[in-house]
Length: 167
Image: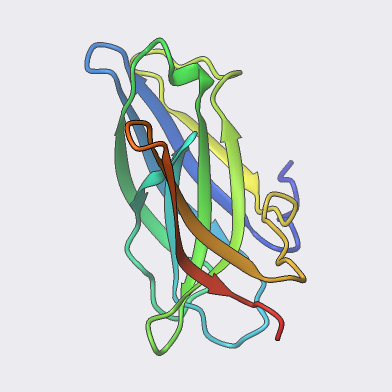
């Protein structure tokens, strides 16, 4: 019996770990039933292997669909000692007419409970979640960089960007 699709959508992907080459192969298969507040959607997916949030791999954008098929493979180099301590994060975005990216949904997939053996490709589906997404702050958001120079005893703070700040 098929489980009904989540009201906000579902993602299908496969995970395989190659022990000899220490490669985690993630196959992005499809996303179904994206529920949106606008008519047309141009979705794509960013895949992070947490805790490394800076490095990600990204699918191609699919035009004008709420049921995109991707069939793309992504490879992360990760040691066999740490792979089970990592978490895959799938972020589904929409690209609008002016090429701006809008985060729609996210899915977290911890690898700690998975049996990652050679030649076994686990095909998995997960309902898209609202809970994992950070709610917008009522005070806005600020991104900054801190660096400390031990020799000079100086801390440098650089404001990179700010958005949604109240007047």
